[in-house]
Length: 239
Figure 1: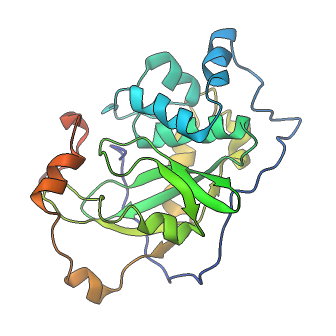
Figure 2: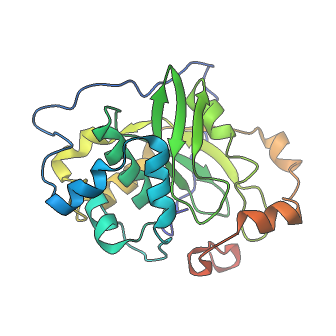
């Protein structure tokens, strides 16, 4: 979860229609192979599948820094929070022929979470960086974004044990921000971060369901915080 979180914007539940991260060739003007140093290319060339991208992010310490890092800066600093990780994953997935799509998961009394989508055989999966164990990688078994987002619900909770996930966004195509140089530069990333919060969000729960939610059980709570960076935790009593 990003330390610069925003509340999700609830909206109507969309019909059960798949939104797939279809493969397409990168444009000649924004090739994902352009602009990298030899050392950076060597790192990226090893990330030949979504699970290898996830493994790389899992090895990078979780960042509590209140800044955004481009994929280049993630490799340089060896740090990332969820927004940084989603951009890095989208960049690496783009080199594998996927569209660089991210989805914002909106929360209450908690940080939002940003994930990168990928598609395989018509089904969606996700790569993500998180301070919490249960809201990272998803196998490509989901028919649409709603199904994928719902899979994060039980593992998405705050330090008070409240289940906090409430909405998910329409996929945001990062190729529309290529003019910002988001793969290599940090200075335009706030524009993308702001857009993840304002892109259309869809509600996951009715008010009636929200009122009946239980808190996460203690065993799951402890398991989800394995290896946590305490400095990066959202604390509702301080917001």
